[in-house]
Length: 208
Image (cartoon, rainbow, N blue to C red; front, top):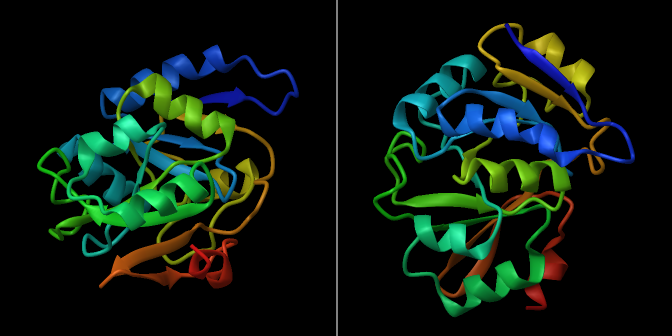
């Protein structure tokens, strides 16, 4: 049975995230708000948990899932060979609505990246999402909270229509601030390229 947590108050008690964070750490699935859209997440370093996440979301296994992180130290634990430009991009846009594709290391299960040698990394600016990752102590594999192919959920009402089973916690933070998925970029041959347009525009990236 799922547990609902209401964090729509202006005076949020972030300690209420301890239990869902523990659920994520042991491989459970949690739905939570970010500043972009709602996410559905689990322990991104747990191969079996990631497999269940694909199944619950009905996401094709050939579509990689990105990781949410809480700080640079967590990024360095799961990536390798990060370039000076990639660090500069992260310094400029993290935390925020940007996902950057970096080379992954051996801690990241291949199922998460569809057997590719890179992984999407995002550090959310939404405090609930950041605290959830921090308390979990592991990167959270977190695609948008919708059945694959459907529009991304921006309210708890949206996501509860999509998911009825397999979710341990629903964390309600009200309507998503941006309501638009993150911009995804990848540096190729020293040039940042946008793979998916979000609220961060090409002009902001080009001026780096």
